[in-house]
Image (cartoon, rainbow, N blue to C red; front, side, top):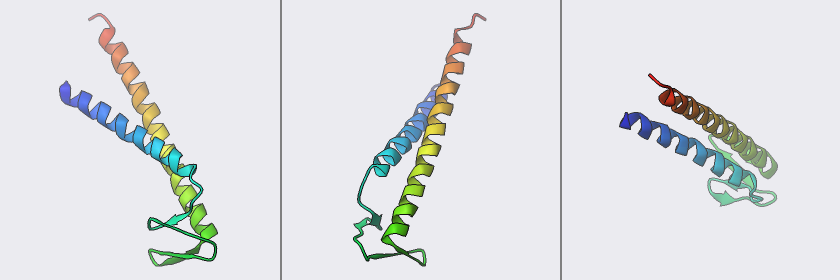
Length: 93
């Protein structure tokens, strides 16, 4: 019983953190490559692919939206699961 609660709250926290971090990252105006801020004319080389600033901005934005989707679905799913679990526990035997 305790382990299932720890898993539930732990995963809910992980999904909430992913959602929040992705939303914060979407609102940043700086374009980064490997932790470094890119400027106009810079090239980002990552995994053997060269990207300009605009391409890297698109790549970062796409990654952030995926994080928002996964985090949001995880939070909603675990919240719904928690509501159903509480409802089932409160039913008389």
